[in-house]
View 1 (cartoon, rainbow, N blue to C red):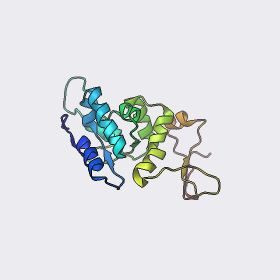
View 2: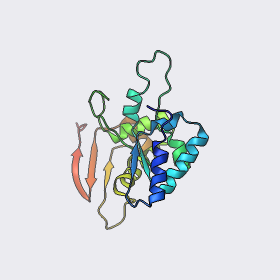
View 3: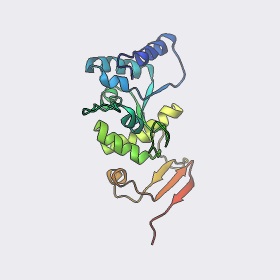
View 4: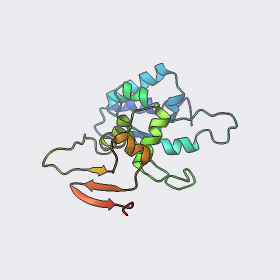
Length: 190
């Protein structure tokens, strides 16, 4: 990690200067977490104005950052709250699934939401937004929604509410994409 990295700010400047019309997304962005709040706010404002989305990758970053340091390490993750406060769309996901960079990565969105809540102090609703609608926006460049008579994309879990679904990470899930049930994972039936 290069704490003095200005890559994200430079990208935002280029996008605005050259009127880039492509959907751009920056991932990790952990160097921002080491910057003063005023720098984060300035950079976040530029990123938001440029329409760049950011994807936080908490599992890999928490696994990799500060390894080998014997004191209590600061765990680097992009400053989600400051970015969102400044109007940046921040999605969340996972990379490095069960490889040398993250030995336990499963790519489970509910696990990512849980890690976000613990490491960045977002609410259950905010974490859910980051792994669903904000992730869709970051990938597709347009918002998603559930609408009557429109194909739906969602995952249903047997939980009383969003927080419980994140906390329990139930293995029973129904995955619907484009209005079609892709998977019906019912494992806990007796």
